[in-house]
Length: 211
Image 1 (cartoon, rainbow, N blue to C red):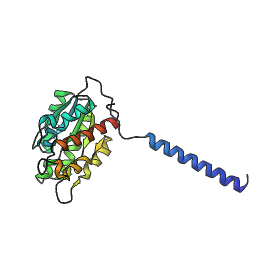
Image 2: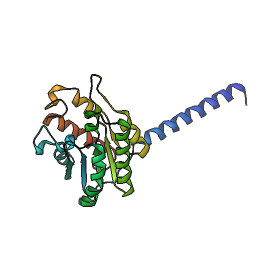
Image 3: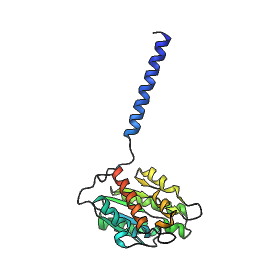
Image 4: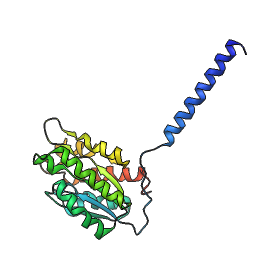
């Protein structure tokens, strides 16, 4: 084989490998969830952001999410709850509802009360671990730290990656950065909760949990 033919052959091989790599990359999406059956339960677990403080209960994100995906969502939010309190409460919620999927949004009150971010992250990590130990699908929602430079705490993304669970880390940052989407300094209004519900619905669809 001449040197020119060898170069052409090598170039074709490289193109073929690049095409295969691109196909593999496109084919490998994010973490998957089981497709929900009609009798399966979804639980939204967290603090006031889940409970829906700042709007009517029908406008809280779990209620709106249920409408968007055509599947009831249990609102298991408790206003004012710290992540360590949520971790203690979680087993009772799992025992009561036996969900197929749980959406965890916890840690905002830890930030507001100056609790340790490391301990908060460990509490959330244990929540995810507890749910997965029961073969429950998990969606994690990241919460922004309050302050002049509002940003979602990076620990949430790290936890989602470690446990390979679907993650939404932008929408609460967008809501908290927009005064027209808030009812007060830290809570969304009805429009804000709808945006949160829409973002979580998209995560559930992308993960294959709903059509």
